Image (cartoon, rainbow, N blue to C red):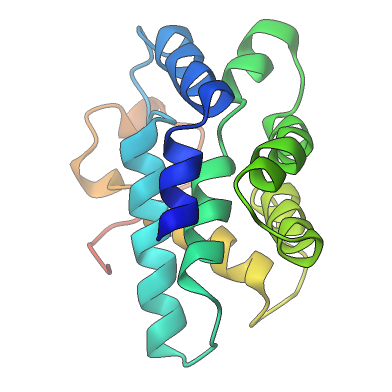
Length: 159
């Protein structure tokens, strides 16, 4: 996972992780930190293996690491994070030796991770599902004030 190490050591990536941390310091709901992104990556990889979809492990981890990286911009500037994360993914992933096709797959998945349009076995659906399944709603102390509907909340551990 050499290219994932490149992402994790990328100056802009590390700066944006820190900005997310600062922006969410007082947040009582789920955070958008490295732990969340790694959870998403691992869950996506498990789903990928279970379903024999064949997506590359580094591609899965890259999309998961990048999907919430600009959440701070949404708080500070009102820029939807799925749009700004896809934009910054271009330069970060290119500098980490991902090719154009891989970058486009990641960007498409990042853009769709908030609201998936009927794509059952796509790379975008993999990121979407893993992102939602990563949240431990059943253990959350703030679940009564969360904006997720009861239907959307995870009531048990699946992955």
